[in-house]
Structures are given as C-alpha cells and as structure tokens.
View: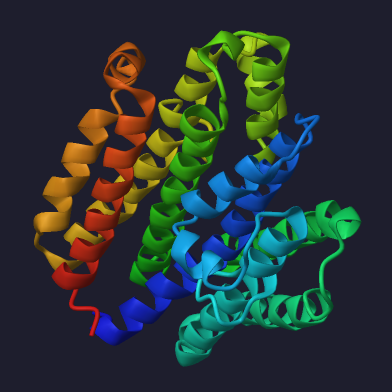
Length: 313
C-alpha cells in the first residue's frame, strides 16, 4: 500500500504535466479562433484567460489582451503557477520525489521535457512563432505520455497517476468547449454560419479531434454533434465521458486493492450519470455553458475528495 504522500506526488505529477499540455491547447484554441476575426481579437484572448481561471492574475500584469501578452503569461510566466513553464517545473519536482516509483524511461522523458521547455520558453514569444511553439509543447508532452503508458506496471502507482491525468484532461476539455460556445460567439445570428462552423472546426483541431470527428460525422460541423463528440463519445480520448471511463477503471482497481470505497466513488457515479450517452438534448435544453460550469465544479470536487479519501498528506 502506497503512502499518501507518494500517491499525492504521483497524482500531481500527472496533473501538472497534463496541465502543461492543456494550457498549450487552450492557447491554441484562442489562436485559431482569433484568426476568424477581421477586427480586434482581444475578446478571444480575454476569453482564453478567463477560461484558464487567470483573469485577475493576468490583469494585474497586463492592460490589454493580445496574442503576445497572453502567450507570454500562460506559457512562460514563472510567477503564474499554471503556466506551462511553472507546470513542467512542478511536475518534474513531484516526479523527482517519487523517482524510484517510475521507470527510467518515464523519468528521463520528464527530465528531458523540462530541459527542452527551459530553452524553448526562455525568449519572449513572437506571435509568428506561437503555432510552432505550441506544437513543440504538445509533441514533447506526448513523449512523456508514451513513455508512461509504454513502460509502467499497471499497479496502484499507475492508477493514481492515471487519476491525475484524466481529472486534469476533463477539466481542460470542458474549458475549451466553454470558450467557444458561451463566450466567443458574438451573436445568435452567427449560429450555423460559415464563421460559426469554422470556429467549431478550430475547437476540434485544438484538441486533436478534427480527423476522428470526420470519421464519425464526415464534414458536418453541427454544434450538437461536436458537443456530443467532446462530451459524451466514450471512444474519443479527450471527451469528458472517456476521461471518466478511465477514471472509473482506475478508481475501481484502487477500491479492490485497498478493500474499501470512499466518498469519491459516490461522486464518480454522480458525474457518470450526467454523462449518459443520450443526454445531449437535455444538456442543450438546460444550457451548454451551465452544464460545463457545473461539470467543472463537480470535477474539482471529485479531485479534492480523492485527495482526502486517500490521505494525500
């Protein structure tokens, strides 16, 4: 049985590394959506910062919303704890604390990514270089994920790390969806327009789901289909339903290993009921923004309960 402190380090190691990639994806969503504007794109960048939960911290440093300023803040500002550079620092620190619980390949991939990011994010970011920087961040974190899934024994060490990955990923997918549907769409008259379709397509690309979406729906970019794909499709690896399918698998294995269930198991069941395969009509009837906001709160509560139930201290 793992010490609570070890479980905590594994869980947060995974959350921070996943958050680094997800922050890059959130910036990517803003960049793609900003390209649809013929005028100022400040609203898009403001929405990205708001969705990251960083509005107050950002406005304490910057007076306007631009690609350069938002990119600098969310990617390389070491004073902001959820920036990419801060997350990879924190993830590596947690990994170092549990280094003997990781395979050599896993540790080396984390350490090499940390060194690569220190170099990549040292200079100020030029907007023209932002797409390639985001691609490098996503590619480098994918190497960590590949080493982790390819070499780690499927035991409780793996299960706690998995919980961290998917709690963080579910939060990010919900936030990216919310950026598009609730904040960025300027007028109801735009719904169904070519611009609206392009924005939805951009959201799919930002979560690496464009091609897989076309396999399911061809090229029919309908908001309900896209929302269903990113919320309820259990085979799409960044959907909310897929994340909670993987969380349920890990949590059930932990319940078997420890011989008991906890409050977090009840919350898991509650969240999975919200993600029933046929619930998309109900979600849109009650409001997509309201659903996503509620989901984010429930997901946060679940993470807190995991920490309390498994004594992460």
